[in-house]
Length: 172
Image 1 (cartoon, rainbow, N blue to C red):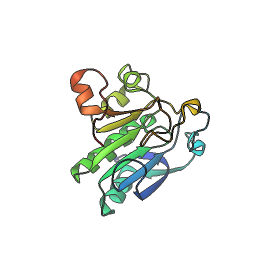
Image 2 (cartoon, rainbow, N blue to C red):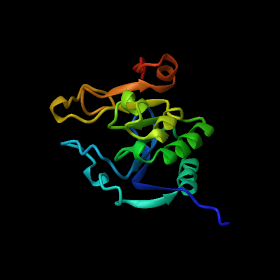
Image 3 (cartoon, rainbow, N blue to C red):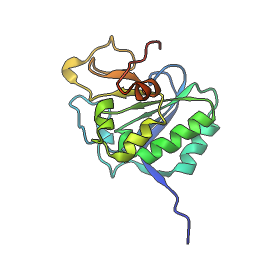
């Protein structure tokens, strides 16, 4: 039996970003998003059939070959549409000593309730910070660091999973 190579569908990557979380970050823009937020800055990522397919192996190699990183950021689209790819990228980043941020239009609570699918719940166990909630154009704020609208939160995922409730990051 031939081995199946797991793949992700992505819109692109930025190897050295300074706007998608603290420090220098490797950002992956996942393809596919069901939220279709008015005012979204990446509407080209909405179509789950768009973008390009990349193997987990190639994605991990790109992360591992990029120097001078503080962390990775999984953005989109909505990465929770591809939780297996989230897990693979996050595990590779953690093995390299990097932290993992993930943006999702679902809230932390909605993910735990299974609204993003059961594997997305598992993906939370591999993320350090979740920037949660849909972008709301009417709540657009330049005062929100690493977020587009004031309803979005920076969730400390490990602490939140331990506490059984969403806890926001205290220090950035």
